[in-house]
Image (cartoon, rainbow, N blue to C red; front, side, top):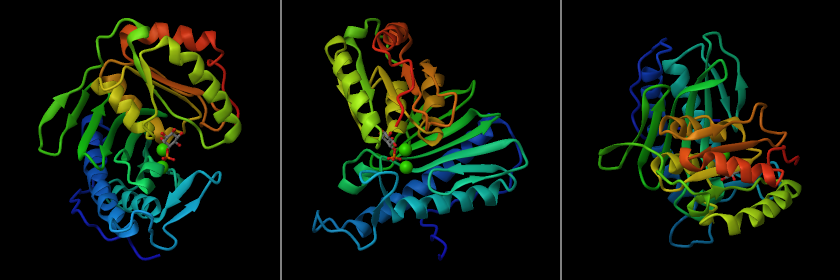
Length: 298
Ligand code: IPD
Ligand code: CA
Ligand code: CA
């Protein structure tokens, strides 16, 4: 396959640091370059003149019939791998589309080239590039770029979380000061696996009358950034994979959220939770009441 052209110049030089602040800068630079590629590819793959039209071969199914992958997902992951390897030879990389490449430095990059692929296919403006750096399996730096809005969310462990908007204004992120779960806006998502979905649907029906409302945005990385920026008060989902949460959960935690992460790889259906601190215990109690503490198998 020919190399994906760099549509956004990314001028990273070689760097071997494990300083979270520097890893954050690298995550941001690479994610911004990748987002420029995703942004440029959408009108090429899905011409605006004919909303139903798509380039032949642009989309195929992956884990189930309803789990799409587009050529933009694979191209963008290729580009991210190339940029990371150029700057950080020897680091491990785990990507949703390309799998795991071993490394020798102790740093592992965890990559979701497009989080929210269904939205990308339909033209709903909620899809993101997510890149995190982990040390010992723990995220120490991360960036999530909301491709359509041009917002760049990022964090370094102990260094706080920010959003830089398309105009360059930087906002330090803090969760909402909400204190009552009945007033909390809760985001969630559903797996591509039908059996897990059935259980997820039953759980959301239990929660719906007990919270302000539910949102299903369709991009877990953005849901987590929305907890960080106060656009929702909490997010939970069973069965997220490391690339879904590795950057966003750090951004939420650095904005003050209480975070619960899966202990395994994701396939066993454990829950991920991020919640504003004032409602975290109440949400955890509610989830436990409805048996949502346990994994939901696919
Ligand atoms: C999906 C999105 C979605 C979530 C799914 C994820 P993808 O990621 O984050 O919101 O509910 O569980 O798989 O497939 O668009 O990268
Ligand atoms: Ca994802
Ligand atoms: Ca993806």
